[in-house]
Image (tube, rainbow, N blue to C red; front, side):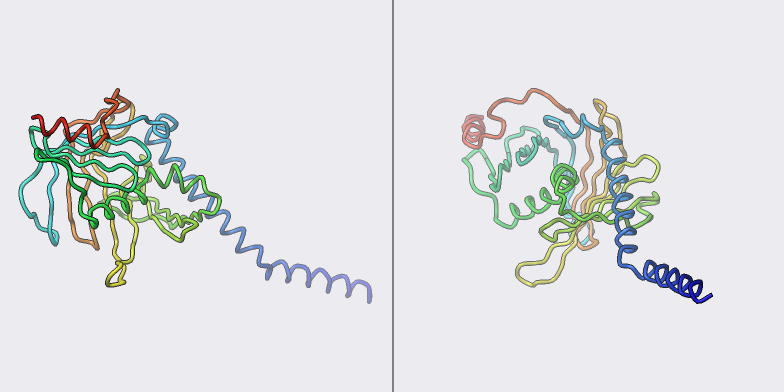
Length: 264
């Protein structure tokens, strides 16, 4: 009888220890991370899978409208935008395409009929910040870093669409939140926060994606809206998208572009 009591006591202690073990929260965290990863994997597949991951370049043509405190601050501007992963962008403005901005690496330049000049520091920093927190960067860089933390945060309503929400936290303690449509798995919204270097308060940068259309096998959002701290700052409406085309060898060459623009 005494041995039976001791055996039952031992079983009780083992079960109680297992219930209080710190391994259970870790198991829950691992399960949550797997769900977050599955959500992002479904998003990549919806965007085009391996073809999207290995895309050579893209061109977007459309109109851009600026807003201040959520209200229109002028007319619309026609633009052409070229992108090559990871850090080359060229944006052309006006119907003559004679106002050009080129971002390469950590630099930004504007080319006009009278020559080139560096873009304002604040504008370049804003571009680099959005590039470093883009969905493309998150998928191609952050997800490949084992130090990145993935958190599935359930479902939210985004512009009348039910969305799965995932937040990624990088090894540098930077965070990006992505919301994807629960049915199509396509991105609906991307947001991140950053601290103002002067006032030290936090700002939120967000983009929302809508009106997806298939182009060359890639679902493409033809409406993109940008927000800062909840206020709309920019809207882009695409006319055309092209992927994996043969670009000129000097497409992102500042000196070559300056020479061509000045000859127009």
